[in-house]
Structures are given as structure tokens and as C-alpha cells.
Length: 329
Ligand SMILES: C[S@@+](CC[C@H](N)C(=O)[O-])C[C@H]1O[C@@H](n2cnc3c(N)ncnc32)[C@H](O)[C@@H]1O
Image (cartoon, rainbow, N blue to C red; front, top):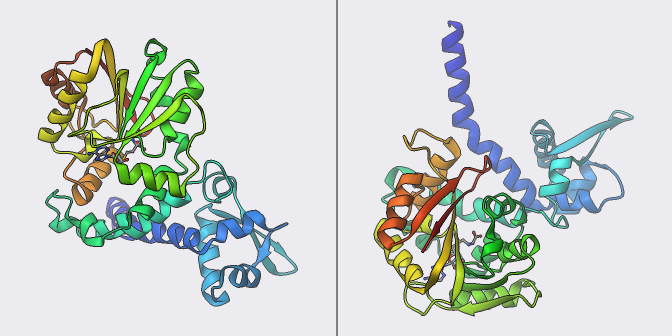
């Protein structure tokens, strides 16, 4: 085999086996391996981990060793025996006690997203698979709204939002973004607007922000009157919907927005030629298997926003997963 064939074959093997890496991560999260190690006074041997999470030692040893190779765990040898502990990555992102834990989101991906992707070849972008799997609202909810504190700072600082004292976070879930927005812009008041079942599930299952400047309002953004605001934030909302629904929603936002007010759209932006970034292309496929929406280019968003009446369109690529678009009424 020539070296270029060799390279191609390696790449192909990596692609084909990529799902196994995700499954190692998901299984270790699901079993609570990172939580056990976070609570243990020091590194643990295979038998202690297996007993602690109720799994067989035989299977656990392989899982732990794969986690070591993936840098999810570290291992030290003492007296010929392996002792496992969390790495920086698992301490920060994978143990539930960490404020930046991504565990709920990973479990959601393991239980729903992964299965939806199993139908990629048949996908038509009609939201069919999520419904088929009948994910309980509570599970979907805790997964999506917990532990995502990491990612909003760069989009919330992409533009100076201090110009907008009254903010409405449309489809704002449990208020994770609102909390960060208030930390960055302490003078603002934020109304988090979401479906009644989401607001109620949030109240029942999560600790909602207690700050006085954050309030919750139940409603359907396609039908109900939207809260008054200087700035409407739509974070990862438009990517859920086909263009027609996006236009309907943006027109409603435009009507409610005060003159001079703004709209901040937070999405992962595709390059204009749609050739990348790869992660955004994958997210767009994720929208295909789970929703009727898609990821879009800046000019596609420009078209949607200007047709709804917004002007002064600006966008900033943040260099991380999500980007920011600001437009004004
Ligand atoms: C993909 S999540 C994004 C959540 C949040 N903005 C974020 O970025 O973490 C979409 C949100 O839109 C809300 N949503 C969907 N349809 C809605 C509707 N018709 N009215 C109000 N909220 C809605 C969902 O309940 C969910 O909270």
C-alpha cells in the first residue's frame, strides 16, 4: 500500500470507528465513573470502580483503559496494580459536582441524539425521530438546560449589549443564558420566555436563577404576545425551524421590538460557501435528524432578518462553536 493509500485507510477507519469513542464517553458518564472518582479520596483500582458503579470488573477494566487513552482518565501503577483518577477534562466537564459539568447534555446525546443519527440516511428534516423516540420532557429539559454555562460568554460579549436595558430571551429555557447576561451586564432586566411546560418543568426540576432582575414568562412565541424589550435574544432558536417559521417568528419579534431596539441571534454560522466549519455542518445534519431546521450562512440570516424589517445587520464569528448576529429595528 502506498503511503497515501495508507493515510486514506487510516482516516476511513477513524471515521468508521468514531462512534465507539462517543460510546466510551457516554457509558462512563452513564455509569457515574467520573462522579465516583471525583468523590473518592484518591485514585481507585478497577475492582473499586466496578463495585462503586455496579458493573463487572472484567468490563470496567477495558472501559477505564479506553478512557485513559482518550485522556478522560489518568492511570498510575502501584505494586503492579493500576489506579485510575480523573483528568483535568473530566474534573471540569464530566463530574456532576462541577459547575461546568456537561454530563446531562452527554446523557441526552447518548439517549436521543445518537439514536436519531441512526436514521440519518432516511432523514427528511421533519422532526420525525425525536417524536418517535418520545423523549420525556423532563429528560430533554434537564439535558438541554443544565451545565451549559460555558458557551454563552463569547456571544454575549461579541457586541456591546449594555445599550439594551430591557432584554427578552425567547426560548430561554431555564435561564442559563439570562444568568450569564446579567453577570456581564448587571444593569439589565431579562424576561425568559418559553413554553408553559418548559417553564413549569424548570421550576419543578431545576434551581432557577434567583436574581430579581430575571423573570420568567410562559407562552408560545408563534402565538402569544411577546414581552416588551429593547433587545430580543434568540439563542439556538432559528436553527430549529424551516425558513417560513423563522420569518413568522422574526416578523413577530420586529413588531414587538421598540424602535432602535435590537435582536441578537446566537447560532453556529456556516461559511458562505457552505464548505465548513465541519462542526457546523454536522450540527446542520443534527437539525435534519431532530428538527425541521438547519444551520445557515450569515447571508441567509441577513435575508431572513431584513425581510422581517431589521437593519444594521452585523455578525461576529467568535472562533468557538456559537456565533453572534446583531440587527436593529
Ligand atoms: C434548542 S432550545 C434553545 C434553548 C436556549 N435558548 C439555549 O440556547 O440554551 C429551543 C428552545 O425554544 C423553546 N421553544 C420551542 N418552541 C417554542 C415556542 N413555540 N414558544 C416558546 N418557546 C419555544 C424550547 O422550549 C427550548 O427552550
